[in-house]
Image 1 (cartoon, rainbow over the protein chains, first blue to last red):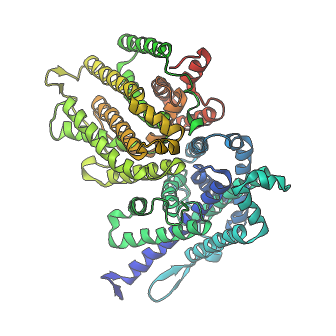
Image 2 (image 1 turned 120 degrees about the vertical axis):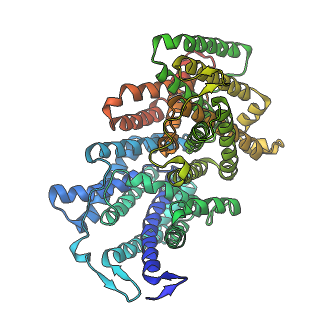
Image 3 (image 1 turned 30 degrees about the vertical axis):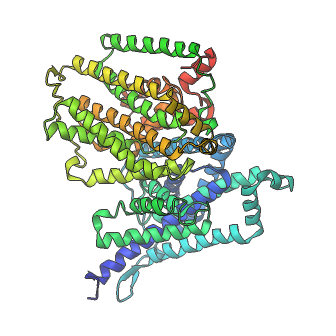
Length: 294
Length: 322
């Protein structure tokens, strides 16, 4: 067996892969938070709950209607996106003129409601969701065993993250979005329906969280508190990266997942706190965050 | 931050101080009589959370900083005081004072990091730091993980008064509460408090007037953390227990909810909010998990319809300050 720094390569690469998987979810979720924050100036505390809703949507689609993983990967984000649009239209839209803090408080309340309802019906223990048959099994790469599903999660999240980045930074639609972030009044004067764009942005952010949730379902169990567990870490990721930049959110997410995986190899006791420690160090050295503006 | 605390518009006139004095007298009389009418354990729990909410309100209501991590100070001070009582055999007042100082120390570290960013980031940083402290509490041996520190003896206050008697305990908690309440009241209307309010309204202008706002914010944060610690340490003595519940992020959320229900930036709001939420939790205990859902719905309702909170609405209606 090959050893690197006294660690068997199997263990090292295994943890690196887990780190990369976690990083994929951090990147997807912090990307969604950044997109929503950019447009709505709201920190979406319900993002974790929407991630959980995505996983439950996939689970329930399978249990109740027999709809499998691949259709669920499309359907669950659409369903949760619609829930997001309803939330934006009925509640969030009344808060834009107020302090940012009210958006945080409202979405925190929503997260409590959603999580509480699911815990009532499904308890706190996780529910299993099978890896789709087309992605079961794996490859032996010589230095480590790579399960197909995990490889797919990393690849899919990279594609979705960079797709989102491309749409926002490089297309006409994205330029409308960025312009509306800078100066909504002027963009409206050009005849663009900014309120509808805001609504759709929130729906898209929620859908992105749900997409991450469906992908997470076969890896972690489907459980009501899966969202609140991850969202606090994602907040730290967002503080480290700064929400000014889409690419910053993506890169920080992946990097911190890997940092967490490596910590699990070399200093397991600190693996649950390492991201928070990094956050504290970044705040001391670069208070605006790694990719923050000003 | 002006809209976060739209309730405080009434100027500091003698008439306004009079309305607050009358309200304080009513509150004090109520709490002296209350144990004859209500279950003392419930009252003590509510009073501890009232201290906690008032300490939290000092930060959100008067400096405009929303901390989502105050369970850090509340919960760790509870661990400190339970440990000091049980393992070191200190008297309760000494354990509480030392724990309060300890929470203030944690406040210096957390505050120094958190005030480096404003607004929404401040909330996320405090939440993340509190979560880190939660993981420490899960792993540290002296907290006893899932079990918590159980079977703590209340001991004798100053070595004289036996606190295992619920009535002695109650009046001790009441004294701690009234003392903290008056201290916070004094802080709010001191020159220091006026600077805090200036920072809340317009930090840039406060800086341009020559105030080192970072120092003011840090001191306010540390005061708030220490008083939250006082609440947690007292609660640990009352319930003879310190557990993970007290350091969990849901506890940080609960104190936000109490303050919001009572009225952000009102002097009496947090007390009323703490009583409403604790009463709700005890009366609805039979509903189990639904309590979380109901709390979430109250959050949503408060933010959408009821931003002034109970006391804020009353004060607005009567055009006085409370």
